[in-house]
Image (cartoon, rainbow, N blue to C red; front, side, top):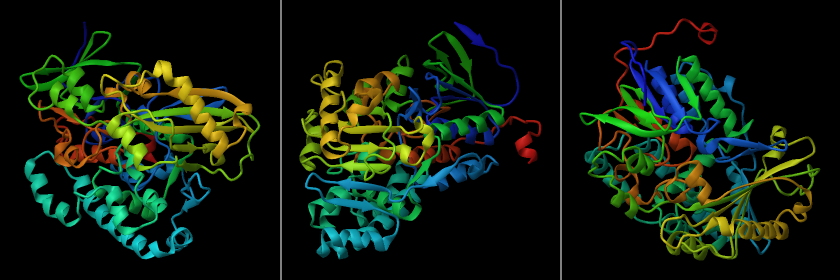
Length: 517
């Protein structure tokens, strides 16, 4: 084992994982005066938001929809930077199109009048209920996102203080239950309730607080970062390095070291020990507590407790490129959601039975209609995502055996329902399964979004941003408060700054070119 020497100087922080949570944490710690070292096992920053390139097609592996750009603008501002100068974020309109097997379509836009017309076209009697749903969504946004979502929830009193709000807003009701109470058309019930799937939750069981996503979309729009989320991650790396921080790729942390009950550094898989005043983990809390702290005694986040938790669903994602198809399938836009023949039944198979069904629902991402850089000229780049069971349990799917079979099923649905004949034009192909998430991102049970955001796995019940187990250890990212999704993982670093003091020995940099400007 080799030790990286430390000398008296600025207060030091180690951040484990260069996902958007870890990157934003490193930025904010740098702004607070810490000398930051960010370590990530991948060759690109971004975590789930990283990318791979094949035959000229850039595949953005993870999130594709950026909402609430204000959280990024605030992040950059906290670091003395201008987000709009460094990241090209473009609004997408329509946001996405939802399609059903019967040929009906629901197009989601920002304009409220256009949305009322869409609802009226599908189900005139549901317009009043839809308007009530929008008000419900805004109320939960104010309470859930702007309220408890941007404050620490590591003390029991933090939760008790919010209980009246949970009761008033019927947090006991599910997202699907709330949508069903407002509209009667089954298609609208789906269209108003599916959003928890974007953060790994079952709409029929996740608390109705998450209908706030509808307000996020309506109020702030849906955006795409030119160059993909990878470009955002690369811009974050530049800020960290300009602050004097270090980003080391291809370095995997094997253990968090603890002395006297306090985290004091890490050991890499190569045996290098790096000391620090504080440690921030953007790794999944399950991996953090079960693997990185395996040699420490835990009282709350034990292996048994983690194993009893409910984890988000898995994801089967097929990334593919097509040659000479620009302008083809002109009715397929940037974001399309294709419903399977079942909604509640499929959700039950995925989340409760953990059964890989023959039918499927698909989210199809076609960034090449917005961003020409994702594909060679005249070509298209896609990714097709299908929610599937995670790997929790002895009877989980063997994806080494099922990968090609499931890809063929997915291809058949796409050919019949969305992009006929596309396989004749294939020029690149890449697949991630729950097994890939487990190996690439070290996600427990191959879960796509860490712990499922049920009511008793949210807020105070979620692993805290300041560790309940060890001093000087902090958590950011999808598995901690406030949860998964781009706005939330970035907001987790905002919560972090309320828990970490300013560096007692701040890093002082010479004036940089950016600062001089």
